[in-house]
Image (tube, rainbow, N blue to C red; front, side, top):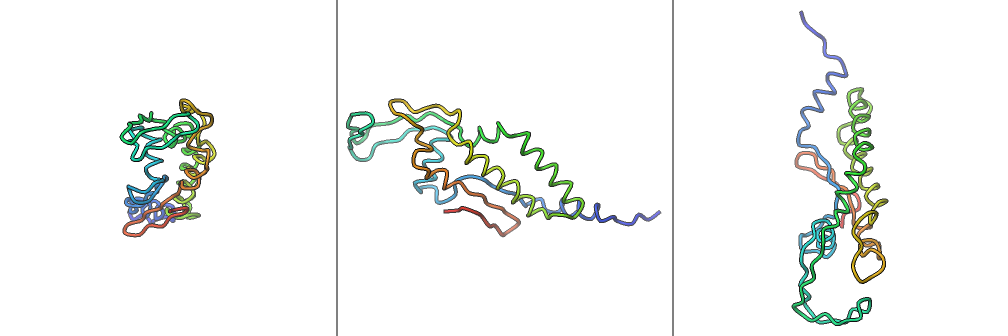
Length: 166
């Protein structure tokens, strides 16, 4: 008995063959760029060594060169994903159905998911994260620079393209 391949089966096989197609959401750039450092220190925490003595008006003190500032992890990007797992899951399920029906491509699906997650992260940035000591506001959102630096990158095989990359 020979089965004719349905359009849905062909589309699902195509999806299976696209294993190296994926999306990324984050702050992209060289590892030593200012925004990637700021994004990483807020997400993972760490220590910052003051390179040059300077007065910090919000604290009313002068930080001397060599002073070590310990930054706690604030998980701003992880929290977005954790809070929105169900929404993202629904988008993925919907997209899988559309891929199987031939209404969108794998690349279009990845772009939809990446942009959705990026939008959610921008909307939620600073919510529910540990507030800085000795100052008002949240340094992640005060200037808007980190929010504007959040980008998406879609990778398929050897090619990639992004939105909002620095």
